[in-house]
Image (cartoon, rainbow, N blue to C red):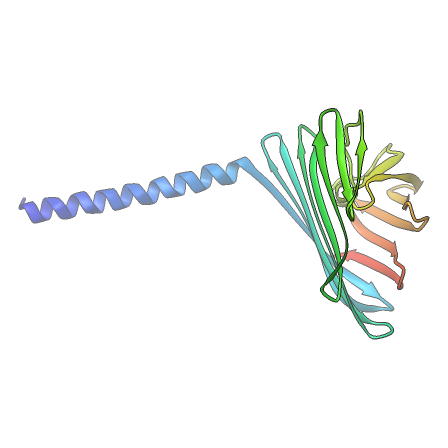
Length: 210
């Protein structure tokens, strides 16, 4: 075999090995991540006006919840509402949370929550408070992926406080927000299928896409 043939064989072999190494790395990485995505249509006055995407990624002892939504409708002019939530849990305890709420592209409110010692530092629209001696294990975003069986309260990462939860019937719950508004959650096989939101502008319905 000539030197040129030997060189070509070595290059071909290395290319083959690189491809297999890349496949192995991707496969190993994918095996470590368990991801779930839920998509909901937003209904108002019988019309589909937006979408909610909820994601849950699990890697080892960490969970990342991410929720993004928008709704566009006309009420005293065109309104586009957007919400974004991101929560990080480790060993089933909330470590960090960030939310923001926009209307027509303008920031209306935000929240930032961080684990601090045995409690949390909470920043709601530049108003900073501390929540001492607390471990948060269930939030609003958790409601999309885990039916709140035998739970009496849910922590709102947007408001930085607990909301009262009451079971109305099998697989249906009422959540009372700090503002006094009430939302209604319905489940099938542990997953949220329908959500009735008592919004300031109108009642919104979320339906899980099949």
